Amino acid sequence: MLEKRPLIIDCDPGVDDAQCIMMVKGSGLFDIRGITPVHGNVPLEKTKANALFLNHYYGIDAPVAVGAEEAMIARLERAEMAHGKSGLGSFEYSLDGLEYSDMKAWDFIWEEAQKWKGELELLAIGPLTNIAILVLKHPEVVDLVKRFVIMGGGATRGNHTQLGEFNIWQDPHAAEIVFKAGFKDFYMVDLDACATAYLTLSDQDEVLEHAKKTSIGALFENFAEFRKEMMKYRKMPAELIKYFLEHYSPPDAAAAAVIIDPSICEYVDKYVTVDCNGVLTAGQTVVDWFGFTGSPNMHVVRRLDRERYVKLYLDCLDSYREVQ
Ligand code: RIB
Ligand code: CA
Image 1 (tube, protein in one colour):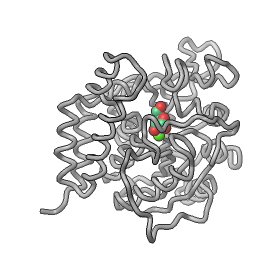
Image 2: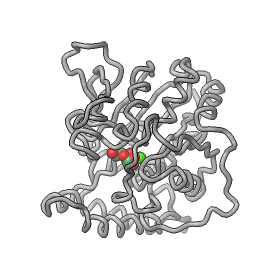
Image 3: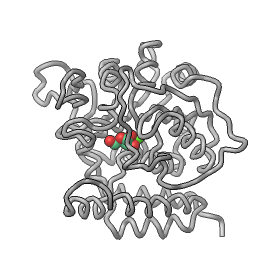
Image 4: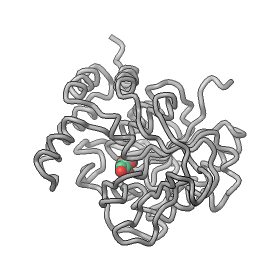
């Protein structure tokens, strides 16, 4: 039994990506072998810089192996409205002295998968372009990945479009390739599941109180301020803005909770495909609830235990406490 579980985080930081990576590192359970940024919330130039910064800011200091700049068939929309122009709210940082790995994301993951002989776990919380290139170059990698968890998809709805969740919508062709690749112990933490893992206003106040006692408090204070400011400009009915402020569910943090402790969630095993050609349905994850079209290819996560999630979030945050 390995002392710490070897893990690679593929991401597009991203305010919620930053919270996910905080939790994974803070859990103390993982040997984070690397972080592989991909295009997504903001262009790759920014997601890779944010990944390099977070890797150092959280004290992970693992290789940061940069991945794809665009989707298989490029989309021209990003998500600055939810993450800010930099992708990390309005937080400013320096990258002085920090360097990227000279390996591409997919080659780095392949090398680590061979090294860990089937023990490597993979967490993907951005568009799946890097993972698709990985499985196209090395299809046998699926036999070397012990557990694969994604934040992505929407069994009943989207968030970027009515039916397209952002990560899948950004690169539906990559998602379809990854969904069909044959990953074992594959968890899809979709929007429905993420919505059950929310922080109430009092939870958010508690997070801020805990964060202020840690070495990473400045980032979380910035995120809290940014969230309040950003929600003023979101084009949605006032009651929906109020709901989202009172039920804050950073999607990638839910995926962190699932890979940290899979018993925190309930799931059903279903066959899921991606609509790559629709107009209104582009990027929709189509769950075959009745098993008409294929045997299950993943665990479709339906809900998380919210109380356990909130406690886990705070416990992971507390691991960054400054020694008094
Ligand atoms: O739809 C939410 C997902 O898209 C999250 O991973 C967020 O960071 C964005 O990548
Ligand atoms: Ca993300």
